[in-house]
Image (spheres, rainbow, N blue to C red):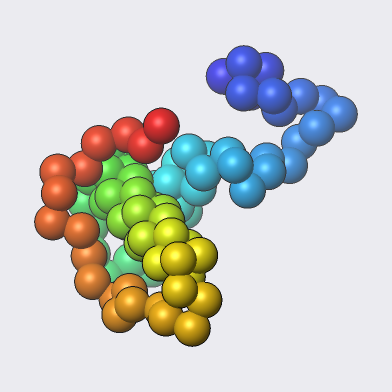
Length: 92
């Protein structure tokens, strides 16, 4: 997986464009917290992964909305605190 996404022995740090990596790290961290007895919530890795992907997709959508609005009216930033009610699907 690493090589197909541009990671290698020489390039071990992902870029900001590698958003897909963040949910995996979050899920692995949550699972380790469960294993060590530090987590208040216990659930499966898949559920943690799905939750993290949804949160990141929501944040990316929100950023795009804010960016588009600020380009059309630089003095206007909408109330960008809402969460999308659209079904979650991969971003292009």
